[in-house]
Amino acid sequence: MRLLIAAFLLVTPLLAEDKPKAATPVEGAVDIQPVANVVKDSDAEKLPNNSFKDLKAEPLKSGKVQFDIQAKYIQLGSAKLPKMPEKIEGVKVGRKAALVHFLHATAHGNDADAKIAKYVIHYTDKTKVDVPVLYAKHVADWWASSTDGEPSDALVGWSGSNEPAKANEKELRLYHMWWKNPNPEKEIATIDLETVDMKQDCALICMAITTQEKPSEPKKDK
Image 1 (cartoon, rainbow, N blue to C red):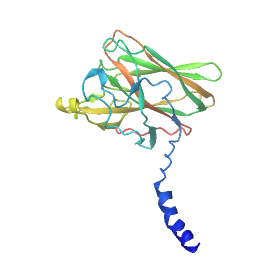
Image 2 (image 1 turned 90 degrees about the horizontal axis):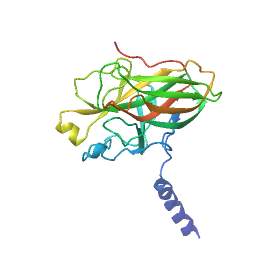
Image 3 (image 1 turned 90 degrees about the vertical axis):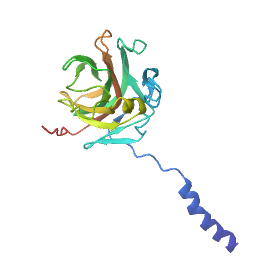
């Protein structure tokens, strides 16, 4: 009996070590997966190896804000992506927030300050607010030159690479935009994403969304 107990005590720590560790929850993370329409590791626009595979499916930190990177992201449509949707509705939030952070980019470029898309914030009291997304102010192309600066009102939240981008002397980028909620006392029910003009080439990519209760905004170097 003593031998059996001793053997059990030796094996038990090994079994405990074999158990997968629980993922660390990202505070304020919004789950976009129920409406996300593109697999992160799939080839964009049928170009081999043109994907976000370099971006790991794990929490990503931009400044003091964390984003929950998962298996899929949201891609809206444009003239160059006519099979993608003009609008994706119903990203569930279900909480109050002083700030909402978006980790996003675009497929293809546009003129500075061109309005390419909007986030529509729906509150539980049935009111809503539009959050415009302007090119070179809040977002830019996910293929970028290493010398390209940040959008004027956003940060580079992540940079990486893939084979076709590298062959064209480009890197991959996602941009961190934040929006100050004018109604922090109201609970946000859902968020919609909408292309403003399907005739333009530029199309919004949204990788992750995080809400923040405290009103302190990220600092951007001037």
